[in-house]
Length: 302
Image (cartoon, rainbow, N blue to C red):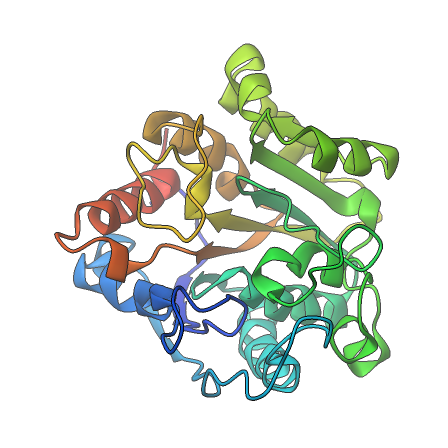
């Protein structure tokens, strides 16, 4: 491994932030950690065991459209619980590798780091997960809203835990891998001066060069460091079909590895989330094996 800090793998198998794939069912992404462990990710990363942060039961109750974020109380409780675990390891100088779960687990990392000071976020995702009451009337699934919630947009019981809103400042966020076709989302982010690097940008300018420049930008004195959030749907569905919302024209594995390596190698990077891969949509396990290979390769010396 290329880093001196100790990697610690933590399971965060929460599916609280996703809509049911069909009536009466629950999203299968809570099995992500188990699937990657089956591929021996802990041993291959030469990581320590960080255990499991057990989520509450997935139960939307009598929630209806217009009621705000579903599972909100459970999400708030889990965010605090996961933040406690992440904060412990970051304080100890460890490097947490958090296996989700859906993208709402990012709130746990963001809250943990907000407790410690001011940190940035490099989100590697097909979409910005920036749905909020100011741009949508379909609020509900926190897995598509975690960046908006993390930057203080949305209901108080999720955006202002412990009175720490916002967990992330707009200017401390960088987005990678958004599809070029998502023009409306990109326009809003541009107006807020949140930098967005699309798949097309990555191919034009080079994944490694863009990531290295971002890692250097995060060294400003106002920041104590930054976190990396990886959503498996940033990959093209041809290689990663096992996600809840596969969008075409995504990154290929070598492009994603080249993007992640400079970010994770930075001494200012303090942790990583891996989210959204759904083993229920991957019966032969090939997509899970690929995702594991990518994460292991991203930590290897390039």
